[in-house]
Structure formats: structure tokens, C-alpha cells
Amino acid sequence: MNVALVHDWLNQRGGAEYVMEVLHEQYPAAPVYTSIYWRDHMPAAYRAWDIRTTWMNRLPFVHQHHQPYLPFYPLAFRGIDLSAYDLVISNKSGFAHWVRTGGAPHICYCLTPSRYVWDFDDYVANERVPAALRAALRPYIKLLRRQDRAAADRVDHFIAISSEVQGRIRRAYGRGSTIIHPPVDTGRFGPAPDFDDYYLSLGRLVPYKRVHLAVEACTRLSLPLLVGGSGRDRERLEALAGPTVKFLGRVADADLPALYARCRAFVLPGQEDFAITPVEAQAAGRPVIASRGGGALDTVVEGETGAFFDETLESLVETLERFDPRTYDPARITANARRFDVSAFKQKIGEYVARVMTEKAERGEKSHPVR
Image (tube, rainbow, N blue to C red):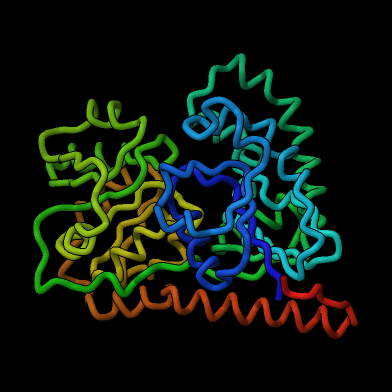
């Protein structure tokens, strides 16, 4: 079977890129089509992939600053013709689903409908975009929504990463979807004999992650908090932090298992589309304190593997005040995490693809010869 994979951009490594890595493991002969590829900044293993970029890869400073080039991505992906393939799988939060597939079935693994298109007001508020620029962008965003909806209409099958994203797909694109949660390498993590006296927050330090809630709550209560990660919001967060909050910067992968396993609880202050970190924390046997919304509703079992708070600083403070990690069973927590393991993802994706291709064969459509 001749498969093509599509990804929005390859200039930074996060959860979306890990999904692509696992998809590439499953379909190692598949070329990866993407808008840009920062070869020297991405994992060395990517250099063995067949990565095919668009003309955008030659734009000045696009690898370091890809967001200002927003108007160009739809045009770039619309110029990719994948009609020679038997199957196209796009892994998208931006415009990867805009590719032209001809008669090839197109499965879109939807991380989310593009935030800056469908959640424009929230996105620009978190990014602190000036009011004048917001007003100037609105007519373009309105046009882009119509075009994005038209591109979604050409997708044959949508897979959503969570119940939250499934709802967004329905609202934005008017389409149903199947939920297959992203892969998590749960085997890397395991419980420690005991835990230390600190809460933990990990991730990119950018405004929409709302790490400030964890920083302010732990500062108010004089609770020890370790904040791992880097990003443009770090300076602001450090200004909010009291003496019990420590910033670790980027945490090496090798240090993560022990860091998770020894925390009192992992704190997820923002509402994520899915969020791998709370699943990793649970794989290490630790409970999660999460904002009540987003992907955490799929991954955290209230009262059994963690606790929820209701978005506000006051609610998080109250939750931390009454939180007792000793009431949670590490074995129960790790069992919940295993539902999201890489092996489960690969099995579900494989079964889904087989079903799509069987339906294609039953309709009498021919496949292209394997090249």
C-alpha cells in the first residue's frame, strides 16, 4: 500500500511531532510532506526519513519564526498533489489537510481545527496581539474559515484526539469523527517507593498554557512547585513567583521519569487538546490536578487518578488546600495510563486504516502499484 503522511511543519518537537514519529514507525516507507523542515533543529533520526517540503522552506527565517507566515500555509499545502497514493494520512493542527488527494482516501488525524482560525479571539488574547492588528486580521480570518471548511469537506475521514477536539470538529467542520487518543510511551515511567514534597508543572511556557495559575496558587499557599520547560512567558512567570517556586528550564528526557515519580502531584493549569504530560505523570503513579476541560476529561478519572479545578485561581487554591496525595493508589493510576500507550495507538490506527481500505476495495476502487 502506497501511503503518504502529511504534517504542518517540522521546526520544533512537541506532542504533534511525536504522533508523526509513531505514524512513521507504522508506515516507514511513507514520505512525509510538510511546509518547512528545520533539519539541524529536529531529531537526527528524521534525517533518514523521506521529507518533502514546499517552497515555504526557502522563506527567510521561516524555521525560527514560522507563525508570521500564516497567510502562506494554505497556498503551500493546496499545491501538494498526492493523487498518486493509495492513502493519505494528515496529522494536523494547521493546514495539512488542505492537500489535494484526487481519489485517494484521506484520513485526517486532527489535533485540533486551527486555533488561530476557529478560536481567533481567545488565541490573539493569549498571544497579546495589538487591538489594531486584531481588527485588521478579522476579514482575512473570516475568509480563511470558509476556505478551511471547504478543505475539511474534501477530507474523507476525521480522527479526533479527544472528546474536546471531537466537539470542535463538529462545530467547525460539521463532521463526525472517531476518537483515537495520541500515543504515550508509558513504558518509560513507573512509580517510586515514595514521593517528595513538591508539585510539578511541565510544558512550554507560553500564555495559553496558563502556567501562571499554578505559579500564583503555589506562591499564595507557600507550596513547593517545580516548573519545567522554556518559552517566552518565563520572565513574566518568574515575576509572579514566590520563593517556593523553582524554574528548571528545559528538562532532559532522561530526568523526566524520576521527576514525575517523586512529585506530590502533577498540575495541569491549562485546558489542552489532549496533553501527554498528565498521562506520563499517571504512568509514573502520580495523581494529576487539572483544569476541568479539554483532553484531561478523557485521561484523568476524578477521585481515582486525580482532581479537577474549575479554571480560576481561587478554585485551584481551594483544590490544593484540600488535596491529599496519600488517598490515591499508584497502581490504579498507572493502570489508567496504560490505556494510552503507543501499542494501543498503533493497534487502533492499524484497524482504522484497514477498515478504510476494505471499504475502498468493496467500492471497486483500484490501488496504485507500490513504488
